[in-house]
Image (tube, rainbow, N blue to C red):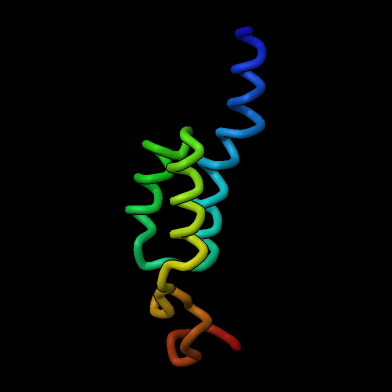
Length: 77
């Protein structure tokens, strides 16, 4: 039985904890610290992981954090 829970963690819980963080970072969401917290503390539950994933996908982005958004800041686009 212990093996099952070990595999469950690596195959189900870990992606629900890590993927929302990666998506939020990639999209440069404004609420990255809150998404981190939700994912870290409740990502191991399916509900918390799905909530963090949805928030990371639909959350508002912050174009000021994108160095390529404004060529005057040194980004090239």
